[in-house]
Image (cartoon, rainbow over all chains, first blue to last red; front, side, top):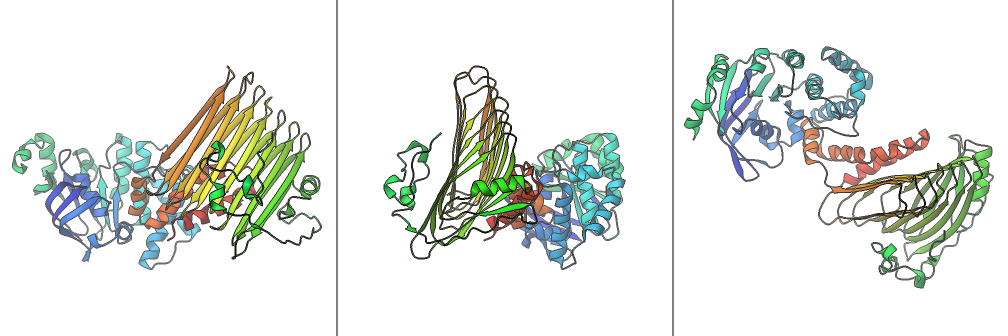
Length: 249
Length: 351
């Protein structure tokens, strides 16, 4: 589904990813763990197409297509969804308006019919209920004045409505208390499907107790230095990243 | 309060940059010779209220004759809403000139909403001067849309004489012109009177817009609030000159002025000159002026959700100026302005 080969990425002129390779087949959840500054968030941003994140070498194939050729919004319409570690506040744009604009823009690009307002609202209501999001909150400007937990729940609401084929969760657990973590994880788990892949970027084992990965990769200094099953996350939690820092240097 | 004499048909009366008040807007440079007088045949139609509750008034070369009559009709027979249609036609062969003066009085306690809709076509130069006088407790709301062609030259000046406990609220929305200056002078009456002068501008290409406001607090307990927001791109210029003067003895004055602008590219300019001159002791005054760029991170966030860049930019632009329109109490006019801003935001980013 997502196939990354030998990817190198520079942010402005600083080389962050140095030949990263990774395959995530449909239906699987892979976790990327690593110390601060390893390039975890850079991987997410580069895949989403953030400006100034320059791919200096390597390829990324998404469902058989060259992902790197596409503009940011085209990648989204192709089914890629990056959940931000710090979701942005969009003053003046009600969350509902934002959601509908995004959904219909994606439909338009894919040549699908627009979702009519009543149908849209019905779907929003259903999803909002499971995420414990109040409809009044959706009438407010997106993320403006929302707590950290509310912002993350909004991210999950958007995933559920946009129905992407592939999710990248960038430190979705940061800023969440235990209850919020459970609501958000349940929301993500509900999206697990045989035709959907996920990449979960995290520092800690904690999130992986809730969202159980099929594979775990250790990212250090811009490269994946080790891959393994879910037990690898527990080992990292026990021994830290120190053992890998020497290898990467 | 008197304005310096400006006669659009007499180039020797044009202010130049040497005049501090016209430092950023040089009329003599854009209008090198006097415009030709436009021949306008004007028929005064019977005044009636339109279905949306507006009394229609057309402003043209014969000035604002009949303005008071139309306003009185609006306040007595209709819903207190007056629509001033300022549609000026120019020529493709040299400038056609229009000049008009008008006066409008609101008696004590009267309320009026005035919608001034200034559009036009081809090359014209217009100078208008309006004088509004408010009685005690009167309330005047002025919503102005300046949607002029890129060749237009316009100077619209107005003075407001407030009275105790009166309310004056002004909202100006502009897409600029070759030269466009909107100037408002308020003689604040204090004693519970409230003045708001807000505005938003979206300027592209070589367009120029200047919003000049002057408020004089000569009495105690007056309130003034201003919020002006704008965006410029290409080689457009936005100018905000705001001055609030609090005279000696005008204690209890509460004055706040905010100007927030975004510059979208090098080559576009914002000139901001917010001034507070305070000679009274017991006052609360503040002014803020911020100039920045569009939030690229927010833009990327929108795009990453599938919104194309141009749509995302228009959405963020509209969102930036929205708070100004949101304050308009009259629902019909608020909707009108929101539509105008939505269209303006879209065409602002269209190539």
